Length: 408
Image (cartoon, rainbow, N blue to C red; front, side, top):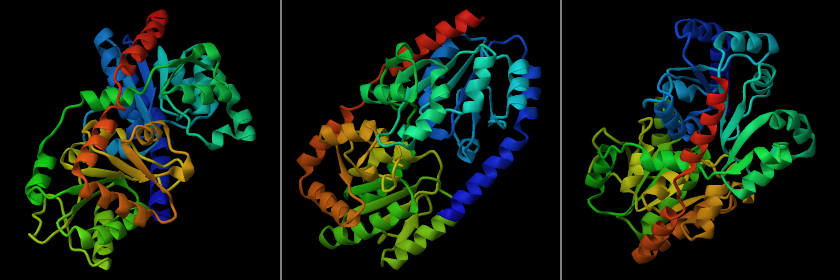
């Protein structure tokens, strides 16, 4: 894990180092078009902003959208994002940022989720450009809420002109961080709009359904290495009672070396695994996904789902994707402080959180319980689906549109 993270950081730093020149060259050819600047750290943040930007594009067809990011995953994302140009966020020093704002002249700077960059927010304030946060969320127990960190970030949050908070609880935490009370609006989560509106590919699910032949399958999505160890150990327990049960594992960042590691890990547990799309032998009970951008469609074939990242504090990936298909969800409990969507799933009976201690046994126990009681599984899936709410993108786009019109 440390080696993977180190590679990501190095790639991000290298990409950011020379990014400013590329942005200046791009804008030179687009003078005269109003510019919306979206900063989304990673793919999840970009997808959260996607339905909002689509609505803004309809309202202001002449506008250009630039998307800056800090994660290499955005550069590798196989699906189109609503942006005219995508690239790394340049270094946040004052000289670089002032040069960018003077040349780019954005009408608004939009942040998604929780990834505020103080240098970018400060530059927006100096150049009288409104800074906006959409899909705003702050995890309970976030280090940002600690007094020293909160004090250091207060000025940054105080500069935000409009914030769309995912929930009342998120709104309260954003207020504690320094966002002016009058700037905060509880909108819900634009990511729900993105999930509900996105185009669907049936191909991945069809392949899984042909492989299962109707057998129940758990799709473990957005997994990290610690999740995969838990899931494989749990599957050993489940398969002893339900030998026809199937497992699909889709790593958070699939890559050839991750696929090899997973094949080896499955083998070490006495499990024969194959790669999705490579023609699984008849006796295969575990499939590994190595395709980027396929996970949301894989959940369509799931009887139940496990979402990774929650075995670490603050790391849980999106649980709304399986919930959209009325699939009940299991996940690590994020140290007892799961994010809004996950808490809502548990409260409404659509999800189960797993403690770090004994996670594999607890996962196997719940997995078997749902296998033994299909009506209960269906009820849990419908409860999960009921947690999704559309409409946040409409409210958010209307608010941003007002700021854009004031600047034009």
